[in-house]
Length: 221
Image: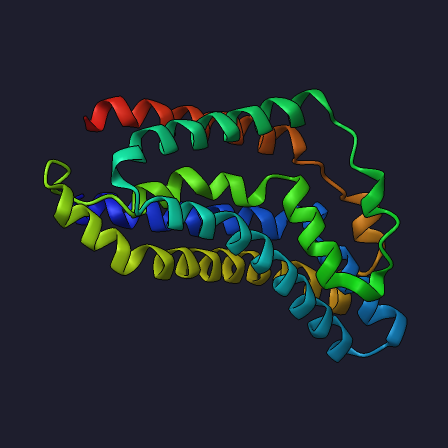
């Protein structure tokens, strides 16, 4: 894999994290609410930390199993196809079912880490990164099985963790900027007057990423 391709994959991880951070559905309005209710900026940042924790757990929970499976080089192609199909299926489901799960409404704001984990899971946030992660774990010598196996066994779990950390950092940074701006300058009315729904964009993104992931398998052979 060329350096430019690798850089592009890492940028995709960051970009998806920024998207999640900007999306109100990932929780930054809850951080604003926590700060306003307690009238302390510290509560806002505490809430952001809890949101980041839940999001990270959702990411790593999806990526680590794929990292473990990648050690089975003989099944790499099938794993990548299955991963792409799962991502596409998740996108189609979210495109058809536009309603947010009611279970998320029942989670009290005091359990923000659990809420963030649930929100990231049902939105397919971890699934979005699976094709990107599988690309990050490719090696140049695909015809040299032992070399590929050694590379994957040595680095794929570390890469999974790095992808999760980077994605979560981008998510919480972008959402945190908006949350702080609303808390300090824009006020709560900004949320009600400027609310935007990115669910359709996210569903289409899942379908595109899954399709690109499947198509890239044939290109790489």
